[in-house]
Length: 232
Image (cartoon, rainbow, N blue to C red; front, side, top):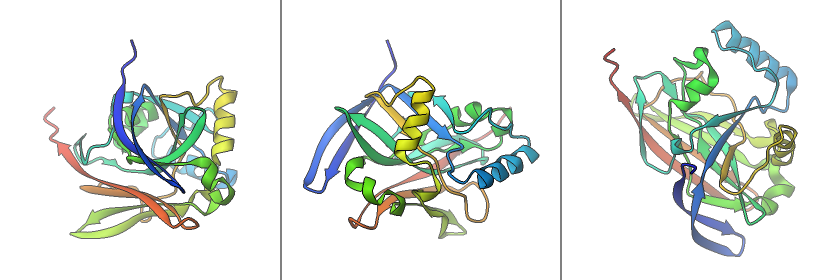
């Protein structure tokens, strides 16, 4: 029997919204999903300098335990060596693809030991609202992802960009199929992120959102980060 997690969510279309209970039994994180191959290689080279092993290929798909998915407003982490990361997400409901957002919170201290290890160590907060992909596909590259953190008592913009720098959902799902996989019902797929402004760093609070400037709507989630003391 597979482990599962349930989330109460709102499915929002141009015509209205519906509250549903989603059941997830798998979480897949798409990594190295940038469209600009030169910029992607530069990022890989930078990480290699700090001990993060280069991927075998790009993109890569990392499995994390589905129990790491959460809609909570607070998560616990190991010490102060982790950070959030806003990403667009995809789910499949009755053969229709829906778009949401999540934070691929990752332990940066342990990242040099392996990306799968670093990702598995942290919960992944996600929004509780999803939009149908077919409503935004025509203006997909204009969709924005944004995140902010708390520093010195102030809210600071941490990430701010459009999804134009990432593989589109169609491209991402094409690569997933090449792996012999698919976006089955019950799977949450992370689609990638943009760079951190001022560098990757810890914060006691992380806020992230997905913004559709064409249809004038946004989905947003904020969570506190509570460090567990390291005693040995």
